[in-house]
Length: 196
Image 1: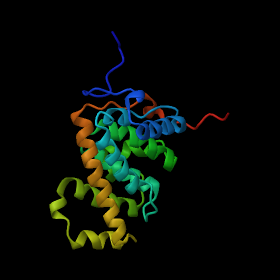
Image 2: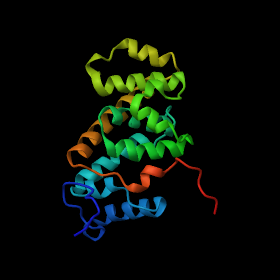
Image 3: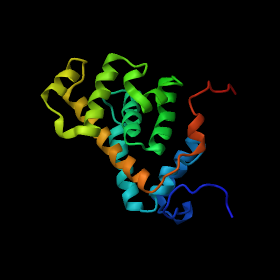
Image 4: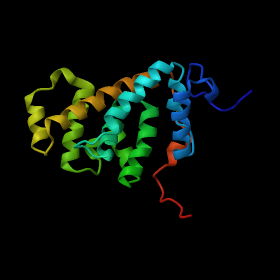
C-alpha cells in the first residue's frame, strides 16, 4: 500500500495514456522544472478540458502586458488565498518568489496583501483583484479611476479581472478535487539557488 498522498480524488492517467499533444506539453514542463506539476496530471483526467484550461492560462499569463510576470502571480496568490486554495497558493507562491526574488512575498500576499511589502501600484492592483474575487457585482467607475491613477490602462484592468476570474475557476476545481501541491513547490524561491 502506497504512503504517498493522492494528488486528486479523481483517477490520474499515466503519461502513456494521454494524447500525444498533452504528453509532449507535460514532458516539456518536466524537463524545464525537473518535475511534473500535479495540476497537469490532475486535470488530465479530462483531456479536452485540460487543453482549454492551458490555452486560457497561456493567453493570460504568457502574453505581453502592462502587468509584469510577478504582478500577475501576485494576483493569483492573493485571490487564491482568499479562496482558500492550497494548491494555487503553494504552486503560484513558488513562481512568485522566483520572479520577484523575495522569499517572504507569497506568504504575505496569501495571508493579508495589505500588510505585504509591495508598492502602492501593486496594492491598488490587488485591491481591485480582491474586489473582483469577492464582490465583482460592486465594481464601478471609481475602481477604474483608482487604477488609472496608478498608471494602469483599461487593458490592464481587463487583465487583472481576467486573471482573477480564471483562477477563481482554478481554485474551485482544485478544492473540489483535493488537488495536492507538489512537495517541490514548498521550498522553491525561499533560499538562494546553489551554484553549480
